[in-house]
Length: 260
Ligand SMILES: [Zn+2]
Ligand SMILES: [Zn+2]
Image (tube, rainbow, N blue to C red; front, side, top):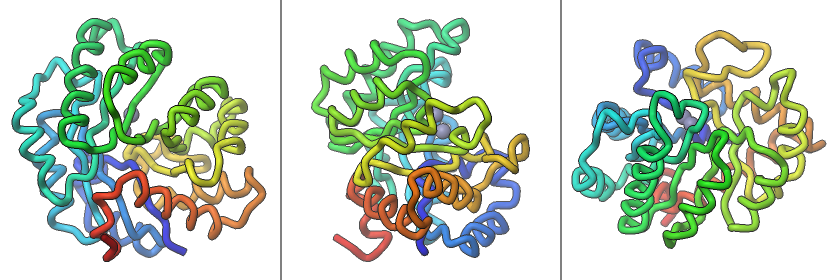
């Protein structure tokens, strides 16, 4: 069985401090490919270096909505996106849970710029969306965006249907295993085989029974097993679908598995 962690943050201290060990644990769990996702201008270079130094790892460039105040250089992002290991623009989006820290107008302006970069680079996006669905659909409509991933999905069934109608993908993290996530479990059963992805979002959001501990790519196996169980299929089958979907939505990653 080959698993893909479609969304990890390998540059954060909790993972990076023992990166070699965590990558080895991941490999033993069957996790062959990892997309390590950029969140800020500060993390961009380290994240790319991690991808360049390890087999089976690709990365993104992009500024998380809550990191926009740290500033960024759009030209540099476009330049870096030409690197063969950069397969997406992300994570970008809106997080209105934190609008006291980063006001809506700053978030909307940042998202505009990020979507502009993604359109120009012709790369898919990794979308972070929290408590913001009306606005995010409105802004995305203005750009010729490639099919993209709504990562760590926590929205409603209605918004999931909208995402799918727009041709995008839905990725699930350990949140799906949490007690209160009843509607999310319905969504995880509903998303079609050709639109579903799994991720850790490590070092955050470790799945039950590891909740509260630092998360790591190996635990994407727990998420996959849990969702396979919900959908009434073998984990091998879900792993195969999410593997195919990963290389379909991030076509630039195909060099990782020898494809074109
Ligand atoms: Zn996120
Ligand atoms: Zn993330």
